Length: 316
Image (spheres, rainbow, N blue to C red):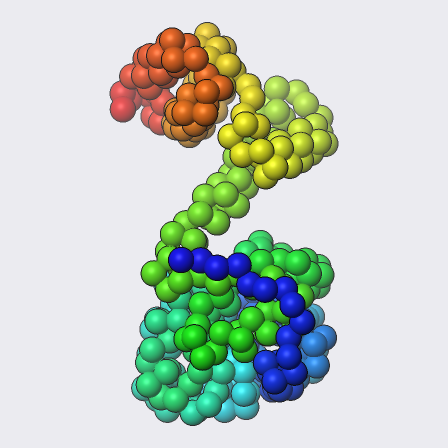
């Protein structure tokens, strides 16, 4: 069961000592977290990165910190941030443990939302102290990320005896620790991806369609609307639902799909799927009358059966 973390000041004994910090994987996340830890008094000493972009990020956010191989990062640092893609993480941890790169007593932190502390078991067996600290934030790979960490929630998973140390590190980075049970990590990550990643897709599609409709500045038009919608949704949940689906305007929805089929066929399937999900929620919360919901769902089914939804001209 997830538990909110107390915001009371940490006792000095619960604060991590000033540590040397290493980063394995200089993507958008690692250098920003290390830069934030530097502001809290810790000392970045090594970073690894393969691509030119990674090396540029490391140079910008962690100037004068040497670029070395992953094993050397672990040799130099007391606290190591493993900030690599989710699919790479298990193999990386196993490799570092098998080659003896992991040292007893070393804090090993990964930032994957998908995994809890269990993915670090090979390192745990080698004596490392495993922590999963996932910032619920989208990163740009620039200095602005360090500022955005202020107030950012972190999904924290760790052995119980390391819980206070994990929470202290998050607080030192300006974040808000939120305890996530090991078995809840995949669901937690799916929830964040559903909200954040899919939001970007929806907004990008909306801007493209507005541009096709002749709007000169789609971002300026959408900004106030989406800002208000997000604020209303966070405050009121499903009660914030508005628009033709929530009202049961089946004819308007059918007209929308017709326009999308003509101008952006790749968006039709997504529109229908989101319309169905919106109708279900509006109906469940008493915002949509049952008879209107039935008409709407019939219209959606009819539109879905029409050819060309996928942009190929073939029936689905």
